[in-house]
Image (cartoon, rainbow, N blue to C red; front, side, top):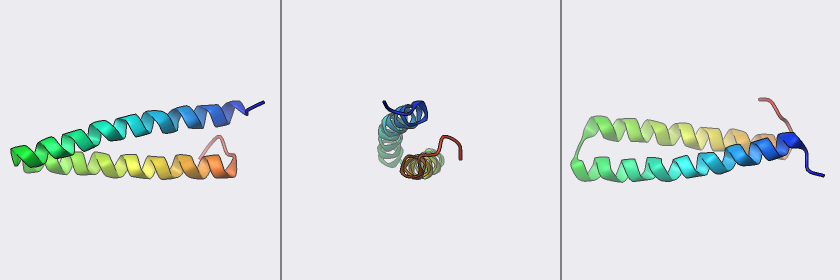
Length: 67
């Protein structure tokens, strides 16, 4: 049977990937509009999502449930 912590991490990973799609969409829109503030915000959100994804992958590899 799959560990409940692993399931939690997988669900978190999937939700992070979905949020990534939104961030990419915001990034594209900010570039089209030429809005620098929105562009910076979208870039920072993308960095947060990438970092979160890396942490989740590390947890899954190590089998941890807490960082």
